[in-house]
Image (cartoon, rainbow, N blue to C red; front, side):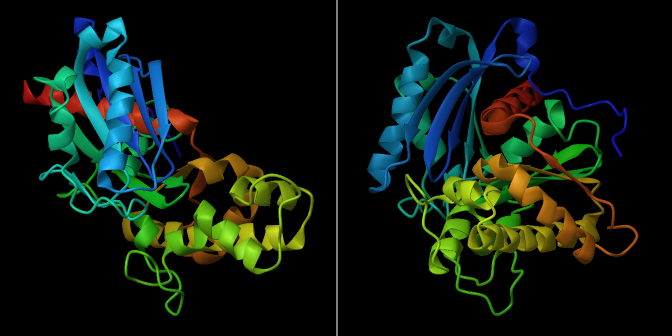
Length: 327
C-alpha cells in the first residue's frame, strides 16, 4: 500500500521563477505545454500527428513548439523536455516510434535544438511512458508507492517503472517497455517484428480491429475504441469481448512485471483508460488469475490521475530534474 516516503524533487526551477516546456509526441497527436513548478499546465498547443514522411511529422512538432514560444511566459522557460513514443535512445537523442513509421533513428533532440527560440536551452529526451510515470509518481495515482508500473494504453501501449521510489528509465530510456512483451506465443505478428505483444492485443487500435473483425459496427461516428466502449456499456457481446481480450493481455503483462520486480500498483492512463468502467473490471479479474504467487498477488489497479496531461507534466519534470542535477 501507499507509504509516506518522501517523493522525488522534480520541478526545481520553480525556485527561480522559471517554467518548463514540454513536447509529448505520439502516434495520434503531438502536444506541447508550459508547466510550472507545481506541475500545473499554464499554456497548451496541439496538432494531429501527420501520416506523411519525417519532414511532415517534424513540422507538426515544430508548429506546436512555435505556438508555445509566442507566449510571453516563454522567456521564463528553463528547459525543454521531450517525451516520445518509443523506442527512444536518450543518449543519442533519437527516437524510433513503432507507431510513427516515418521516424527511425530520428534525431529529434538535434532538430528541436535548431529551433531559434530553443537556442541555449537544455533539451532532455525521455520515453512518453517514462514521462507519464514520473508525473503519476510525483503528483498522481502512483504518489506514495515505492514500486509501481505506470502504463499508457492508447494508439500503442507503453509503460514505465518506479522501483525503490525512483523512476527507472534504463540506459537507453526504454526500461518497462511492456507493450512489446509477448503474452501470446502463437499470436499475430506485431509491427515491432515480434508476435503476440501486449500492444498487438490491448491498444485502442487493436480493440477496434478485434471488434470489427467479429462483425461489430458503431451506431454512429467513426469506428474506434471509444465507440467500442459505448457499445460495451450497452451490453454488445462483441464489444464486451474486445475489451475482455485487451484486459486479459494487460493483466498477463502486469502479472509478469509483478512477478519480476514486486510492484504494488499498476496505474493505467491513455485514451483507452477513458473506458475504465468497461476495461478495469475484467482486467482486475484476469489479474487475480495470473498474479497468483503471494508476493505478486494483490497489485492495485488505478486509473491515471493526470489523464492527458501526464506525458507533458512528466516530460517537463524530467527536464527540470535533469537540469537541476547538472548544475
